[in-house]
Image (cartoon, rainbow, N blue to C red; front, side, top):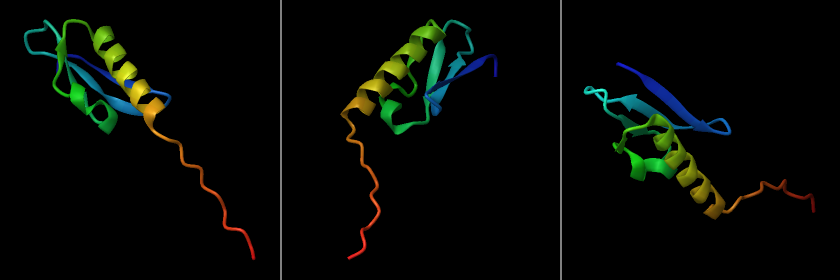
Length: 75
């Protein structure tokens, strides 16, 4: 592998940007379901790829309702 960069947000691993064999771009290998639509996307700059993944993750996170666990109450 020529070069790779782990992409994560707030401790959540989104995927890895891997330099292409021709060294002209970075391919995104998505590991988190919220960024699957970016899987295999190639961009010329790793920072652009990371920003897209973070933005997509953030937009999906904002739309996902938060479920709070509550302890059962004694009757």
